[in-house]
Structures are given as structure tokens and as C-alpha cells.
Amino acid sequence: MKEYGPGVSVNSTICSLRFDITNDIGPPVLFYYRLTDFYQNHRRYVKSLDTEQLMGKPRTYDEVQSGGCDPLEGNDTVRLPYYPCGLIANSLFNDTFGSPVLQNTNNGAASEAYNMSNKGIAWDSDKDLYKKTEYNNDQALPPPNWRLRYPNGYTDDQPIPNLQDDEAFQVWMRTAGLPTFSKLALRNDKTAMRAGRYQMDIVDSM
Image (cartoon, rainbow, N blue to C red; front, side, top):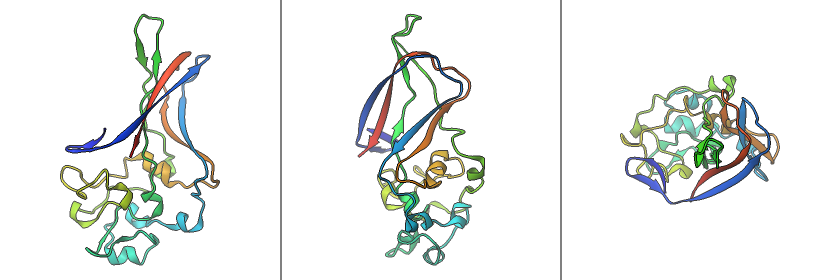
């Protein structure tokens, strides 16, 4: 199960990836994920966002309808905008990567985690494009593909996200120019990664 918050868990699959590092590397050590045949460069996809909404402005349903988020502006029945709206945000890559764990270490320990972080993965110029939203929880809805994480919409227990601090989101929103691309997911800027066999657990939400 993948835990998203109080009372919210989602069925998931864990893939354990084992790999060998033949020589000490870094720092820094950067970990990327790679997608193939995913066309982030499609003209309609690239345009499907609302820059003012991402800068924190609480854009209304009607304002979002007249913006660039087509075809995922909001819910027509309750007349609330999606936050964040648009195709790019809705398709956010949401696999979760654990830190690699060194197996059979030389110091006698059974394993040893090589701690990596998703902080510092976004460009500074990209970070400037996002501010904490002024929406209240009842003024917007999560986009369709985020409903596993927010099954009851935005609530006090699962509040509207602060995209200013979500660097994984910011990395995803910088669209790739080719259908095969890599995006930075984790990094360690202080510690060398020792040679050895590592295991990394990857959690995939179903």
C-alpha cells in the first residue's frame, strides 16, 4: 500500500531494482527516471496549463475556462476549477523511488542506505514559476488522475498541495522536447556512493 496521508492508502506494486556500482562515484550523485514514447512535446499538451494559477492566484472556474488548460479546466457540474488544471499536471509521473540500499557492507552491517533527496532537483528558474496557492480547500478540485491521492477532494486532512515546494512537480512541468526523455528525481550532493550492489524499491500506484 502507498500512504498519501491520514486514512488514504492506495494499492501499489513494489519493484525492487538491483544494480552494481563498480567504482565509488560522486558526489554529486544524480538519479534520473526515463520515459519512452511519451509525447510531452505535443502542441496541445504543452499549452495545457494556467500560469497565473500556478503563481498562486485563485482563478475561478470561469477564468480557467477562458485560459489555457483545455481540455481539463474544471468540473462542469459543480463549476469548480481543477488545481492544478491542464493536461501536463494531470499526467504527473507519480512513481516513488526509495533511497538505494547497499547490500552486504564491509563494516559488517547487513545493509546501508545511501540517502538521496528530491530537494534541489528543479531549476531555480522553474521554482520561480510557482507560488503557494490562495485557494481554500473548497474552492478547487484535484485533477482526475490525482483522485487516488485525494479521494474526498481537498480536505483538512488532505489539503490542497503547495506546488512551490513540490520540486518533482516542477521538474515534470518542464516539458521534454523529444518522446524519449529523462528527468531528475533524486540527488545526493555531499556523500560519495560506494562501490557495491544496491537495491532500490520503486512504488507504483495502481
